[in-house]
Length: 241
Image (cartoon, rainbow, N blue to C red; front, side):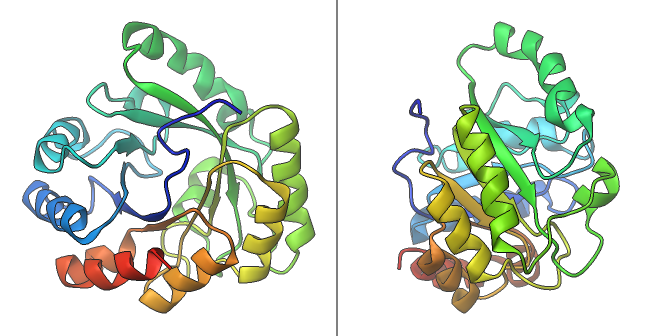
């Protein structure tokens, strides 16, 4: 696998949703996250262009230039040249061609115009988190079962066979439970590249559990929206375990 700015990076990744965060609040959060040891900022949501996403990317880079800023896009029309990289997500847990290849084709002109933005081929696996989440609703795909580690592992093994670089296991925004450690362990056994895990992770204990099960990067968004900057330190310390 080729290298990317995800390679060799371990710890807490904070997810900023431009539709659920004020610009000032997001700037304060990323500054605090950088100081407390977070290793990555993800910017995006599952709905596409809205809110202050375009302007916000530049503001976040100025607020914490030492933290890589990676876009988590819903669609090609959302791509932003002010980020360091884009998770070029292929929803391998679903069978909707729009999110397997169509949006990627639409993204080609963007990457041709902005060669400084790194495209990170990412196998995106939605895992049942107990509720119908935004990703499931928008993509019109069913999540993988929460109690069948072998199914998640097979999807990631297939993604590895076709040469994808990173993998992202996500229970989705609004999940009532985090992805079970057994799923993460099975994914880790099947996947040699960078592994991100997110969705339903709201405490230092759940961050630590995901890391100990094999996640390289633990993605937290909702807990930061609810708890603000005061919870960043505990989450970042847990992710360094």
